[in-house]
Image (cartoon, rainbow, N blue to C red; front, side):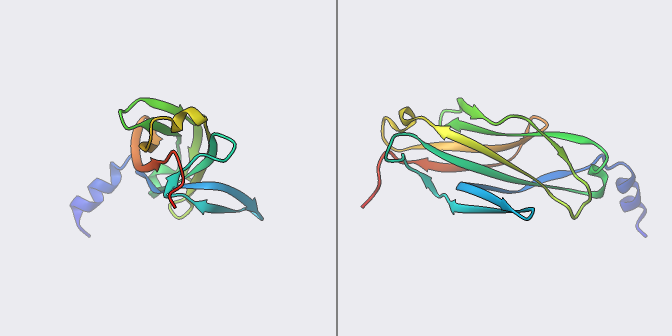
Length: 145
């Protein structure tokens, strides 16, 4: 056994990663299984104005991350970095290295977000005030034909 590996293992304080960050039109849960529907690659306004969507984040951790609570939230910002919306804070508990913890947050965009043409929104999965994953999604003010 490598002594350097063994000593590094003793000092691990737990590592948690965001292994998935997905935007969808909605989701449903049946028999304890979550299903996302309408995976989004852009967001467009609904016919009656604004629009709604969900952000799904999956957190996985090593065996050393199992005996403490982590705090997670989903943050939506504009392309200038201004935070527009954020989810409530979720208590994340990693039960075991092979058992991920998932967060699903719902967001409603007012029709005013679509004024001014195409823009980008940034979606971040934040754990204990550190961004673990982020993605950008185009905000379109109309449908392309």
